Image (cartoon, rainbow, N blue to C red; front, side, top):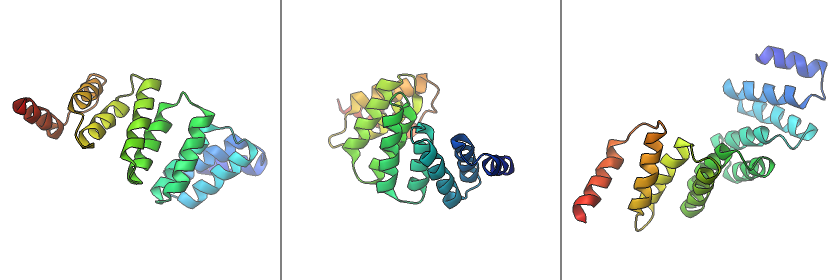
Length: 168
């Protein structure tokens, strides 16, 4: 696919989607610098492609460029507020940055945006268990929502729930 996209951007250098697809292909191959450059070129041509901002945010996160990841993912959300996945990724980045409450806010927004998004429910459950004091009932609700939506169960989380039940 990479070779086809390289040929496409040579033949149509103003094609934003050609550069976007080349960027995604480079990212899948682990060529983060090339991926980033191609996504930036695509965004120069058309800055409103939310998926490009999202992928660029993921690349920055993988390169441990947290501020740039936050910026790119925030722009992805601006361009497509209905994409709950961008909020999930932003939650992961701000969590790595040390902002647990901001991470929870983004996960709550992801669940509001897409109530069927198992990964957001699951991560929200884990986050609720990490705040002090833990929000066990909220965690339980989101954990079981995630399980109902197809997420893998976690014996560790279920043990936490059992231990809090015994303490009540």
